Length: 241
Image 1 (cartoon, rainbow, N blue to C red):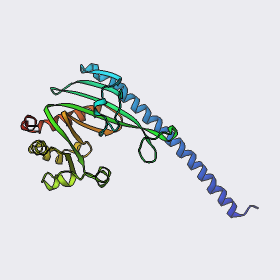
Image 2 (image 1 turned 120 degrees about the horizontal axis):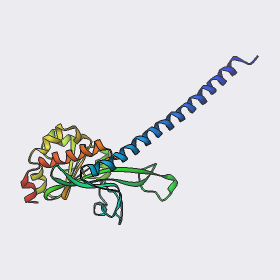
Image 3 (image 1 turned 90 degrees about the vertical axis):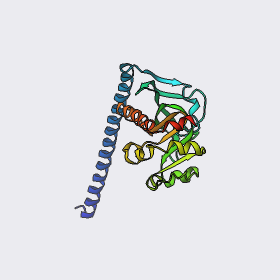
Image 4 (image 1 turned 180 degrees about the vertical axis):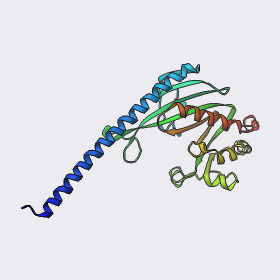
């Protein structure tokens, strides 16, 4: 008669194998569902553009080269691809949005020369025209990792709640003071979109982005967010920049 301990070990081993098998199946099913959801949203992205009088290109090259080298377009280059590249007018302002895709290391997030160790990263980027030209400025959620990564603690605005939550990166003191001397500071403190969506001022454009794929809901949410932010920038900020 087989010892009780041996039977117990076999039972535990069988349960472990069955559990791992079930886990693999569960992961596979979830990935299939996620892939189906993303593809469905991409299909909707292609459909809403002509319905709204916008221009849609599944993959446009060379349209985003000027944004390279600074988040969210991390790498400089020519003829870079912008996926689901869409342009048009929203709330009286011209805009563009797209997916920016690049390969990064599965270990540390850096680009790797070894294809087997690279995985695809996707940023959804939204850009809305500003009423005038401004200087470079970024408003980012404050984090120890972010400050350590680029060595820039940011300029204090003078509002303790804001300075605790955000860091502002800029070298133009005049634009910094004029742009934030209005409703944008209380807006970002109270609007939940500001907790997940950074703002980047670049020449005559305002940019936001997130990690992930495009969706119809995200399009409306982020375009509205940029327009709401621009509505709270004093006109003087653009005239003196």
